[in-house]
Image (cartoon, rainbow, N blue to C red; front, side, top):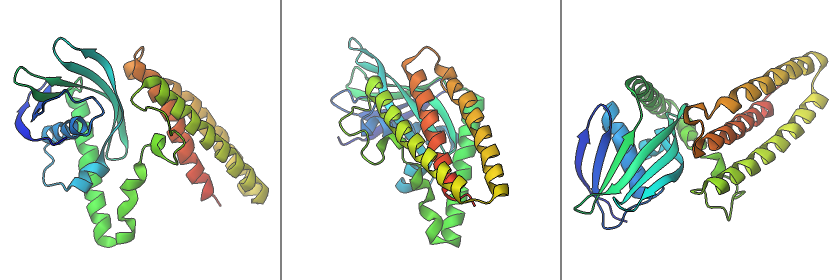
Length: 252
């Protein structure tokens, strides 16, 4: 779907971007996601970014419709925002057609302190990425490694990731695979290490399990009671386990 920006309006409560469209784009449509990202960039004052940089530093994962009001042609949407590859939070936005059949996108519920955090993470990521490209071209693709775990390896093939039930099933599959890999690598490391390093790894692993079990059940607290809560919790387990796998691979 071709999408042309027609106007930009910014307020302290809600940020709107208006595009031209004949049909109501869904929460997960490329045009909607693109406008959400442009809202964020407009709000934090980030300018002069390439399309590749935007893709690397702002990710909108697991977009889905929380509600649809057919009378006013509006989707209420939920997703997970990742800014700069580090700062993660649930995000709510709306996709609507106005009386002139223009596509109106708004981002809601982000307070000033959160905007400051998002801005800091994005600008810090831009600076680090550009500095890395100057010093070593081999380090440049790092941000591309942040691909959603739900999209890797085709493990979720056949599932509709805009449907909460399917998305949670996808995350459960990813977690099961990552947990199995983690256990295998841990056993291999414990069999190959000397006694002192073996004791250190065991201590670290116990601490990591405690951290995971403490952190992940709280991951959906900001959207407690909503459909996004279980997604955020399951995603936390997947992300922490996958990162732990990579850590153990390099443990010596």
